[in-house]
Image (cartoon, rainbow, N blue to C red; front, side, top):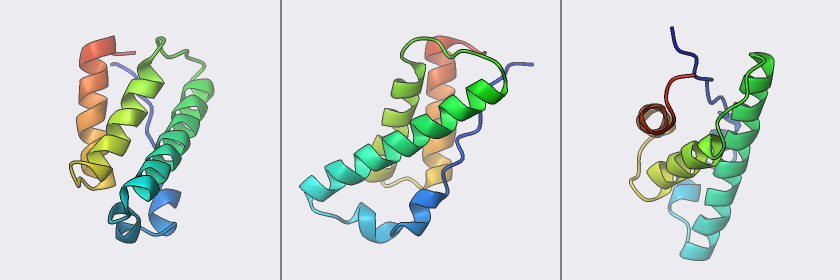
Length: 95
């Protein structure tokens, strides 16, 4: 069975939820950076806990995808995570 870490950063939703998604472009960029950063922290922690190393670029790819999904495609966190994990697995292979 392939390993792929969970992306657990529900904290983002408590920071302002949907209101953050309706922000002006400059604010949306900042929100995107926060989402990407929290996602990367969670993924790195999950990989460390599993004693695995992600392929180069995988964390950035996945977390940028999640941020874009939430901000540009208006997906929920779960929808963005599901789509992005599938894309990352296709691009980088199962770990």
